[in-house]
Image: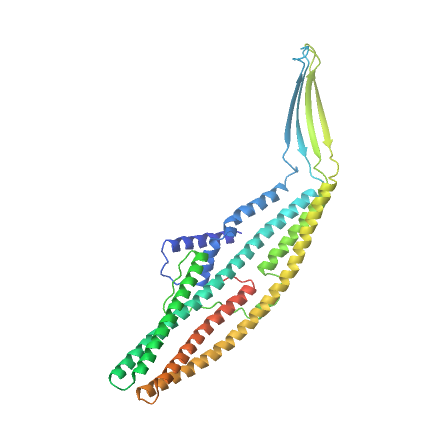
Length: 414
């Protein structure tokens, strides 16, 4: 728990520095984005208070009494009815005591709640990580699209300028100039659309993290470490935060049901009272001590209602746990398939980009020598641009697929 507090404090410091512009020029990594986003979450801010409440309940189970003792003070006089000097003063203390097994049940429930608070925090961190990962890789894709859009626009403008010179020299027809200018217009529209998508991705990421992301030109984000297939063995059944959260929730429900069965009546009350009295004025004072035990009757229908509610909560938690285990395993299988598919797509995209780049070089030389027409040159340029886009997206998609696999395994961004 101290480790979690330290991480949350560091994350809050990172967020405040970023908001103040101290790191405004540093590239935003996935880990930094996650830490900043988690520091803004209500679960992170309320974690200490929730755990403090659970510890207080645990400490209350260590007390010898079920409730704090109560002081009882009473006095009786005949001053307003005869005034013969009759006086009686009584002082005592009432102490609620535990039902058989109640103290152990309270301690077990409090311990389960402490554990559930920890696992609930870990699961909330993982849910935050899922949102951050989705927004982060969407931003990376938007950055790639924007960079390629600007590169395509520069290439189209360079080609249009070359065509204009050759039209002026009488080497090409004005129809070729129109085609080149049309390619520039299409590239401008595509670049503007990509810039708009990048702005939207930045907005979504800033809403999560509170940081306006920046990225070095040509920077390729470092992908997360591939956990491999061996890490998946048994993780979904044991240490996955979502499964652990529901398992601890089910344990709390079971403990609550056991405690409800024990608390079939109100707590008995042990009272110790001393009385000092005299019958009339001039008589000697007498003092007595009374020890009493109050044992309430059973709770009846109210007790049965509490037990039924606790039992329903336990059944619901167990059912949710079984369903979540199946979902986690299904997500893990799908994530592994997507990583394998992304690797295959990256290999194919690298081969296509290499071939398209070579073809672009061939046709550029042929166009300069007048051995290829402009429509063919434009088609080859579009194919090369698309191949570059596919390669860049394939690299991002593989990194995102590995990130999704880590998410399915319950691993936080690193």
